[in-house]
Length: 326
Image (cartoon, rainbow, N blue to C red; front, side, top):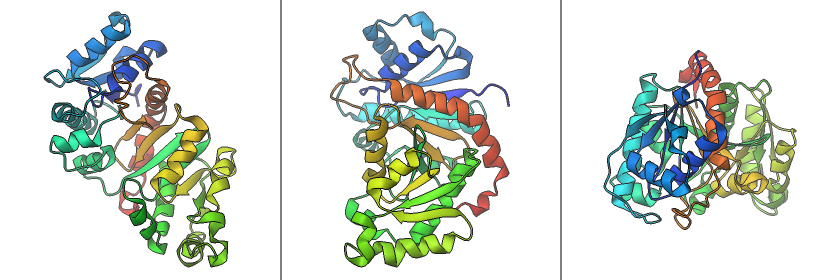
């Protein structure tokens, strides 16, 4: 495959998405013909001017404009949500037509896109629907640590109720599939425990002995899977190379580990789409939007990961039997 072309959606125009994108591109020297920006062009140009970045650094980069009325920085609005939605829809169309090989997304506001009429709560569910993908899972990468999530955006009570043998087994299969798509030679999976000290044989909770351990035992004949291991140590073990990916049972279990390891450097990836999608591991940061103080490290890393992995991902995705995706 030729040098990958990466699409970048600028996210919510009232948040820090345009700022961190501008900073990441300006500081890194990415090749202009390898990038396509999708978002409101006037908003982006205003941010570049506010940051006092030389606009010539963006010459040669293709920009697909999503027209918009002015939005107030740092505030949730229906108009900003509409721009975010239409940017994602346009970028998805570019990916499905082959004009880009991977997609890197700046953060959106869930509240804003719902105000704008979105039926979806986040990027992942929207992209899955737009592409008709069978199954999409989220993987975090922070240094050597990779984390795959069994559940994400749901109340904690519901997430705990989702810890069943069936769901854990399916997520183990998804973890192995994710590592295949990313081209990992070793696929050593470990499942994080739900309860303190992995339940202490039922003293501190029954989920480990009743649901998680049976799922691991059943999957062990097919995959290199281990656990459940206490969540207070399993992420450290993976970060130091003992395991290739951790199955996190709920949103904050994995997010806290990744952000403590490297708050600004963690990258989120969607596995199961017909193209690689990477993203920052933070939100719109409305509280600092428009001040020029946002850290662009995660956005820079997300763009780099998309460039590095997208061709490999596409090749692996096409050679894997998609009907076997859990």
